[in-house]
Length: 123
Length: 110
Image (cartoon, rainbow over all chains, first blue to last red; front, top):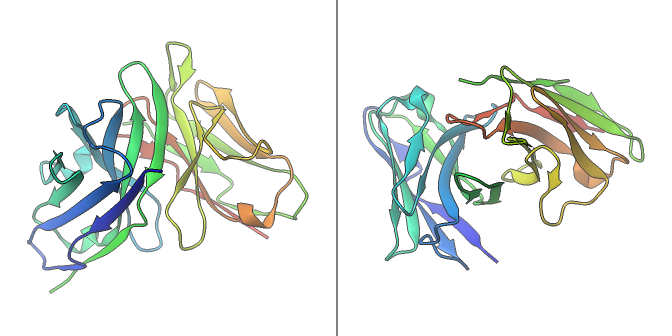
C-alpha cells in the first residue's frame, strides 16, 4: 500500500523560499504510470492545484504561481519536492502531496494523498 | 483556464436519505469519449480522498451508494443513502487541461 508523507519547515519568512519534500513508501517515484503532485489549501478555503511532475521530467505548474514554483523528483531518495520562491502571506496554507495515476491516454485520478503539512509565511 | 462551479455550497442531509451535488465547468470536459472530471471528499481534519474519476468511475474502496454521472459541462455526484461517514466537503476537479481546477466545495452536514 503506497503512502506519502510531507516534511519541511512549518514557518517561512516573507520573500524566502518554501521547500517541502514528500517521501513515498510502498511504491516507487520512478514508475512511469504516475505523476507526482502538490495541492494546497489556504486556511478555511478550498483546494488549489500547484503542479505535477512525471519521473520522465514532464511537468506542469499553475500559472497563478507564475515562475516561482519548481517540482522535482528524487529517485535515489524515493521522494519528490516542492520549492516556492518569493513567498508572501498569501502562500500560507496546508500543502498536500499526492500521487496521480495517468498519462497521455489514460486517467485514474489523484488516488493517494499525504496527510498535509501546514506552512505559515510570517516574519 | 477552466472554471468549476458547484452547487449547493452547503447541503444539510438526513441519514438514510439521498443527496446530490452539482458541478458545472466553463467548457466541455469531454475528450476521446471520456469526461475528465473527478470527485473528492475531504472529511473533517483529513486530506482529500478520491471518490470518482472520469466522471463516473468509482475509486477503489468507494461504496456503490456513491455514484457520479454527467457529460460535457454538467456533472452530478449522488449518494443514494447518506451515512454519518459521508460528512465532509466534496470537491469536483477538472483534469482535462492544466491548470487543473477545483470547484469551491460543497459541505455536507447533518
